[in-house]
Amino acid sequence: AAGDKSRAQPPDCFAPNSSGMVLVVVVILAAVAGILAAGLHFAGGSRLTQVRQEMRFEKAFFVAEAGIERAKSELLDRATNLNGVLKGDDGVSNTADDGVLLGGVTPYGEGEFYAWVRNNTNEPAFVDTDYIVIIRSTGTVETATRVIEVELKVMTTLAYTSMTTHADAALSI
Image 1 (cartoon, rainbow, N blue to C red):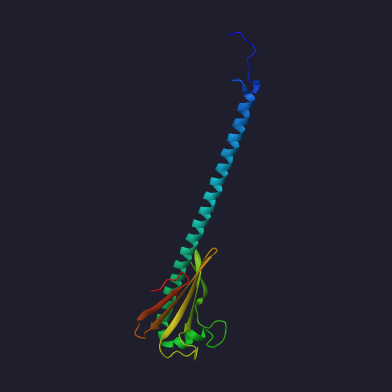
Image 2 (image 1 turned 90 degrees about the horizontal axis):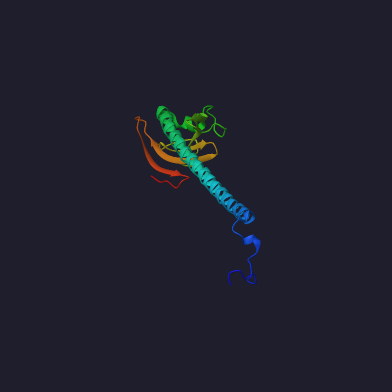
């Protein structure tokens, strides 16, 4: 009947006004939300770091390309004396300045490049007979480095043509 107390009563912890159970549920949900937020934060930060490094690599490639262009200009100015370029500013072969162009490391934009030229043949390394040389330019921006090599024919008539390009990014023109 309506006033029968013999029926089983639910425990007090399941009572509708039980604040202890609500507190436990809220703490668990807050912990789960915190873990998800931290995971999203670290995943987003990791992607951001990756994108920044990709940008550095791209900038380093463009800096290396600028080094190639500056080296081409330098070779154009000194086209009548390629053997002197191959021996370096001191005019002596097998020294540290052999083939170094533009005085070594050159600042450019947000980075720097190092341009170096060598003969396309090994024998003899410091005597050019065909006006074909290989320029190697290394572009560096912060922690990223890119290298480009270009073989080109230097014309004494103030013109030159690119023949092949090899870069560390597997670019071939």
